[in-house]
Amino acid sequence: MINVSSLKKSFDTADALKGISFNIPQGECYGLLGPNGAGKTTTISILSTLIEPDNGEVTIAGYDLKKNPLDCKKNIGVVTQELALYNEFSAYDNLIFWGGMYKIPGKELEKLIDETLNLLGLTDRKNDKVRTYSGGMKRRINIASALLHKPAILLMDEPTVGIDPQSRNLIFEVVEKLHNEGTTIIYTTHYMEEAERLCDRIGILDNGEIIAQGTMEELKTLGSMKESVVVSFNNLTDKHFNIIEKVWKDLQRFEDTIHFYSMNIQGDLSKIIIMCNEFGLDILHIDIQKINLETIFLSLTGKKLRDK
Amino acid sequence: MIRLVKKDLKLFFGNKQDMLLTFALPIIFITLFAYVFRETNNSEEGDLVSLVHAVAGTSVFMLLFSVAGIGGSLLDEKQEGMLKKLLCSPIPPDYILFGKLVFANIISIIQLIVMFIYAWLVFGLDIMHHLPSLILMIFATAFACTGFGVVLASFAKTRQQVQGFSSIVILVMSGIGGSMIPIFIMPEIMQKIAVFTVNYWGIQGIYDIFWKLVPLADITFLSKVFVLLCIGTFLNFVALLMFRRNILKMV
Image (cartoon, rainbow over all chains, first blue to last red; front, side, top):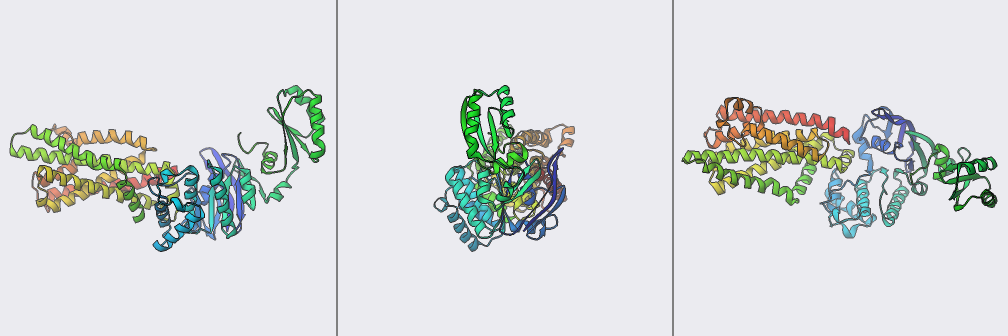
């Protein structure tokens, strides 16, 4: 459904994309995961024909993006990061306008709007001006406007940024429903829980490169992924760390926190606590970290996915 | 494109501030200038000239401010992400600008019509006997001014920049072009410079209709319409180029 090959894009001197490639079959939900500035939005912008790539090939629903941009656009729905809505219009009027951009005939459009508003739980407020909506409701209308023409492909660029848990869950349910109905979805996020929950496959993007991609299970098998015990200290010094490093080889330090990697986390937990006590370290907090996208990302890049 | 125009019209007529700036403010200015200029003349012909100048000068001057504001709305749409979303929909990108130009022309024409009807009803300006010429001049002036407003916006990056930049340009151009002080009392050198402004051609055309009573088919009058249409075509073309170069690239 979507084929991306050796896609490159530079802005001034910075390389936003350094030749990424991926293929997404029909009906798959593909997650693009990466920190801010990794190249997620640039990828979505190219796929939605907003910017032209410097190099590389893209086909969407069988159409070449460069040669047939309008045919590509007819097949995609784009959920932008920005809340692109007319605040002085009601939700209904906004949807009438955006549906009109896809030349959906009047009666059919009205029916589709009712269906979409119902799906996103906004039927009761459909005649209220959008400026009276909460951030989460605006996000839902923003998504609704991308669904009216029933696109075969949905590009969602961080659709849950800055919203309440109720709206977030509703959006998840909508994405899952669309996925079950066979819509091909590209979902960008820097929330690993979202990618884990919604996506069949995940591409991890960092500094304009896809450093790994596959299903969650496939990603777990990459490299030497291990579970870890994460211990935060009150009084960790370089001297302490140097001593611990000699005893426990497989570890990483992040300021006052040490990640102790282990293949047998249950057995090693007590050893780690006893060792820390012996070295006079004051333990503030202990956490057992299972393998998830956060740890995979950390393992692949040496960086955390999100700045805390 | 029609949907884009309908959307803009709906937003415009739903916004009290826009309505006030577009229709109420020019009426206040016409009233003010008409009385001020009338006070400086004693003859009947002087009264007519004062009224014609007040209407002509104010209408073009205020029209430029309105269209600069409409041009600025394109930048609002860019800042708020609407332009990005419009570009994702299957319409040719140029239609977005064409839609804005058509909308700006409609508002400009309505604004000029309202101002002339007001001058007719309140000050007795005889528009009924010059209707064909007036309609032609309204269309030509609106077309030229619209292009000018959108070109101004296409040079800026934000609405704030448009406001600051366009205020200066419009005030200078209106001063030189005869919107404030009538051209015929300006020094000769200023009269020569004035021909480079939109205001000059619009105002002279309105003088021709109501003061000099030039017939519609007269080349003197038609040449002014022609110049305004040429200015409008040129500015719309520049606006299109600037839209493609600046605004689309900034999305």
